[in-house]
Amino acid sequence: MADEDSSEAEQLSDMQKIEIAKWFLLNSPAGEIQYVSKDLKTILKDDNVHNLAALEAFPEYNKSHMICLELPDRSGDVIITSFSEVAENEYLDPRTAQVAIVDHVKQACTEARPASDEELPSSYIEEFRCALDAEIMKYVSEAYPKGICAVYCVKGKDVEEPGSDFEFVMVISAARLSPQNYCNGSWRSIWTIEFNDEDQLVEIKGKLQVGAHYFEEGNVQLDAKHECRDSTLLQNPEDSALAITNIIRQKETEYLASLEASYLKLPDTTFKDLRRKLPVTRTLFPWHSTMQFSLTRDIAKELTIRK
Image (cartoon, rainbow, N blue to C red; front, side):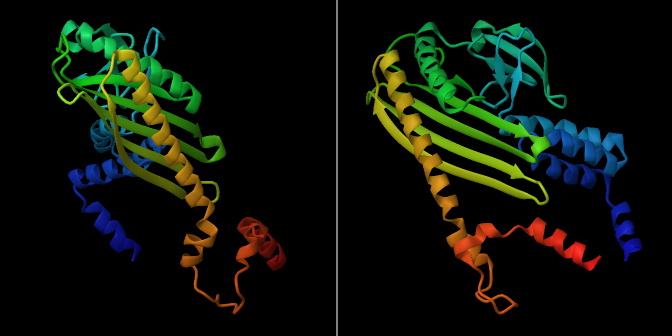
């Protein structure tokens, strides 16, 4: 049987190996792609295949996870996302008006350059963007201790005066990585903000994603997603920024509260459905006192007895 498996593995083409390696890299939990990459290199035993897979997977992973990288001069952080991408491996930090050149595989900024006028919005749009950025920064500093945020103009950046529509995308990226304690987690939210001048309305659409990985003596992952929307009146830059931020704060707080409530109910709902009504021991499981059980303790005790 082992010879057959080995024979099948040897028959895989380099392209198939690259696709398989890419799948593992792209599905790495938050903050763990470098560990997965290192293990894949050992398993593949082919640097060329590994490097090709990494070159394709790392940029996509970095953008989807919205990783944050420090600028070379330490003047700020740049979020790696499709909304900040101005060219291949180049990402705009609108707050410092710099473009970071990124090495995706190393997950580092190698250098930075000043953003060109074509890469930046007009002064009229920048007034709205800066006002929103300032309010969002206050919110993120309160809600996400290690969170990073940015506001990008993705439509209508050349608008010079009232009378035209424009669109922002605001992103929040926060990660808490503690591999030494066998747990990593991340929060990502993307808010599309459409300014409709004719209706004097601001349409707000949010996509929230929470990821967590706990791997001490096991492997448990969480990948939760949520979408929401709301609207507010189009006002001056400062008042619009405040109204938009309050909506975002409310929506994210409600989602976090719903997550906490659903996980508190797990022992009485989901976990019960995963078990048969009456175990093979013919003894009902004591759901009223599940905290008394420790799989690790019971296994260790059993091993000791058998010795």
